Amino acid sequence: QVQLVESGGGLVQAGGSLRLSCVISGSIFSFNVMGWYRQAPGKQRELVAAFISSGSTNYGDSVKGRFTISRDNAKNTVYLQMNSLKAEDTAVYYCHVVRGEFNKWGQGTQVTVSS
Image (cartoon, rainbow, N blue to C red; front, side, top):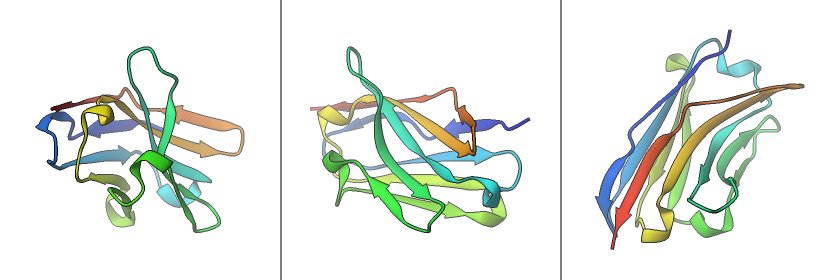
């Protein structure tokens, strides 16, 4: 059973930084996609950043140049470093993995950016 445990969310002032972590039970080498999505109140869930099995990374347009996704294979952990945070980055951030037809979402972690 794959489990995703996110941490690192919180309240930060605009311009500040946070790092989110997603610990994934089981080997992260088996997933086609590993990444972060977010959902703000009243808005659809959107891609923030993701590793694709081809070896590439995808970023949402609104976070390019500010956010960086990384991974520690030994710790089965995916990180999201968020810099230069803006009020519009306020959302619940979800870790997400895909393996073939299987996909799993984490419980989410709240990020609130005060202006």
